[in-house]
Amino acid sequence: MFAKYQREITITDRFAGLAVKDYLKQIFLPKHLRGNLRHERGLQINGQQVSTAHVLKTGDQLTLAFQEAVFLDQQGPYPANTDGTFAIVYQNEDLLVVNKPAGMKMHPHSPTETDTLLNYVNGYFQTNPQKSADQPAQALMVHRLDRATSGLVIIAKNPIVVPILNRLIKEKIIQRTYLARVRGLFDQKVGIFEQRIGRHPSDDRLRWLDATGQSATTHYQVLSEDRKRNESLVRLELQTGRMHQLRVHLAGNGHPINGDDLYHGKADKRLALHSTALLLVLPFTGEQVLLEERAGLISKNSN
Image (cartoon, rainbow, N blue to C red; front, top):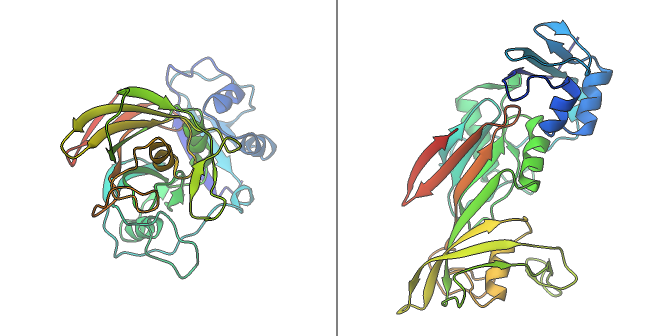
């Protein structure tokens, strides 16, 4: 059987006793990919073909084999550019987490645009060849950071894990934390912004607080205050992921981020917004990896 992408997984105690079909649901493999495995007989345990009713045991080697056609509508490919500079914080067979510099776009909007993070990551794969799901690794976007925002961002290496990671983010199992320096002092040092966010009526680049817009929830905690400068350092956690959500929630509540020229922030050399921590949950195993950046240093803790 020809398979474009093939992923082997060692079953741990966590998933022992589950039928294959229940394991695939628990790891958030999408329905269409589960169907592809079933219809194309793409499931093996310890080298033997099995059905989705097969019960897993600790130590089993589960192989998922996908036909190429199921991924024909995937994003990219993004042209490789080896001239970019970025720091890799963590990587495994399926993904990497990089520290995106401020001012760097996430992905190109045209075939001629090659100065984005995904172009540079593909350039890294070009000079450092590696396999992911039995094929050459490629840079695939999972979630975005605004061009002006710096910090930790996940990039997938194969198309199997993109929908899994997206679901883990949607379900708040992967958690993202930001730091921002903003105008003003807060009356409440811990709180939640829950105003809906919609498109700005006169500028397509912008979003604004809109009672008819999409639901949006941001948790905040004031970490420090500078009364002389009338500024606060706040820790922010996203419960939803709307475009410009942090910038709009803060500005709409009287605390625009320093350097945010779109939302009337105090003039600064850059947008003072940084993706500082990421509770990463790994596809297929559920292992948690906590990645944090403090004072420019990256520390890693896993369990």
